[in-house]
Amino acid sequence: MAHELRQPTPETRPLLERRQELRALDAALTGLRDTVDGVPQAPRGGLLAFTGPAGMGKTALLTEARARAGAQGFTVLSGRGGEKVQELAFHLVRQVVQPALASMDEKGLRTFLGGWYDIVAAALGLVATPSGHVPDPTGVRDGLDWVMTRLAVMKTPLVLLLDDLHWADAESLSWLASFTPRAVDLSLLIVVAFRPDELPLEAAAFNAPGADLGNRPFTLAPLSATAVAHIIRDEVGEEAEDEFCEECWEVTGGSPFEAVELSIRLGERNLRGTSEDLPAMRDLAAAVKGPGLIERLQGFGTTTVRFAYAAAVLGQAISPELAARIAAIGSTAAAEATEKLRAARILADGEGPGESLEFVHPLIATTIYRSIGPSLREGMHNSAAEAVRAAGLGNAAAARHLLEVPCEGNTEAVACLREAAREALHSGAPEAARRLLNRALQEPPPPEERAVLLHELACATFLIKPTATVAHLREALAEPDIDPELRASMVYRLTQALAHTDRMAERPRRWPPTRHSGPPPILGSGCGCRPTTSCGARSAPTRRTRPAARGRLPGSPTGCPAAVWRSATSSGRAPGTP
Image 1 (cartoon, rainbow, N blue to C red):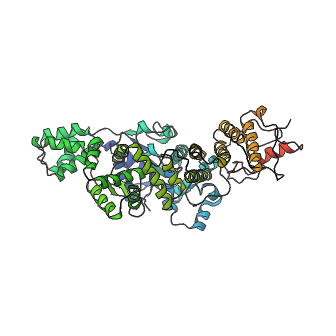
Image 2 (image 1 turned 90 degrees about the vertical axis):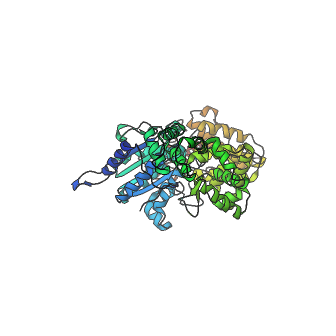
Image 3 (image 1 turned 120 degrees about the vertical axis):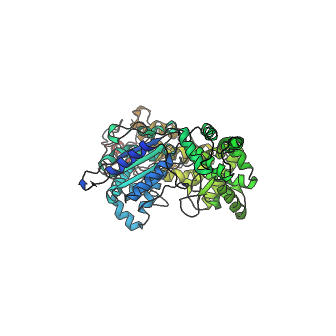
């Protein structure tokens, strides 16, 4: 089965001056086959990357890749990064994998994933409310490796199309960068497109892949004057003058996106491409992007402008109902605004579920979003958070809007951010959890919740920055009126963090009284230990070997919470007691 890129695609147009890229694509697709012209061969996958500034036709190449792969009967999975969804952990991974698993019920998913279900189900968005053990991020990445490898084997040959990789979430990028070298040994072709100047550090390997990943990225060049003239004459007629076509090339800079959009507007105005049409052409070109686009948008009236602003705040897979609610307009007005924006080639029907909308090009979305005044933009993000939660789309989807809203001491915002952080932790994304909890701390929370929130933040940072865990716990322990069990848990986690950072000389000297005799509960816990450790925390087998824990307590073979407790209390002393 083939799954479309979730981006509106205009009517099919020939790809001009992209012969080298298309030859590389055909060669890569041929390499996925086990026979060529009846001659057996060993299938070989790999990476094919297209780069260039916005508007150079990267999405058009991926669309062509989808068409050619589908014509050969290959399975196609796809995903796309988004400027406004980068804070959603594993968002790109979910776009890719969920369609392939959509036909399975829970029993089928458990059968397919086997022992990895509890490790990767939350990361893949297969459970509405994650619970139980918090998985080790390394285990999650191992599980995702296993899932994608199995899909590649089951659906061979498999083509994976990833657009706007520069806007993918950090968790997906980190996993993808480590997994991609394996594509060579599978019948799996990974085709990516990105803007090189905006590529995050997590994806730096895609900008200069090693020899085992195949060709270096293909940098797309602007179109020549001849190619732009071809595009213009396809719309206005062969009689368009050379001087007019040359000027079109100058004003578009050879950008395929701008050249196509300009040609469509020239055709709509019935211009013939003469020297007398040059002033009108320049006005139309200016309205494709930048200030000219905003001026054109404002000409549609306040209601349409607000709807476009709301759509830009939502970013991807835009629900017209949500956009109307954020814009504070009725359904009739929203329908009229949608039709105006469709006609103006600002919005188009999306490929997502339901009757969703998408911007015709990310350049348009970015231009409109950046034109919104700061106060209005913050207010719309706040409305979006409320609308998203009311629509049942989850705390994580709402929380990414709250990150754009000023701190106001809103207890509901704190609760939403904490719940979203909990979901991120259960997905194996502690860095995403850290960002959310930091923002909740800045809100700030009610005084009686501050210590608990600091403890949750300390748990989130334990695997990625234990020095921060120490600082957060010390700050938490300074809070008044802490529940004894919570205080015990804090001191215990602090002792563990100090052990991991070789700072046991700074350990607490006294264990607070508590009402139970075993190891204290670790709120939001999940130590990430392997099955062989004495704490009994569940995890999955891994191909990676975790670095040995530093600064272990004497007699502790693993440094896991329960082992630390048993070692430290075997002589009847509290941890840290001399």
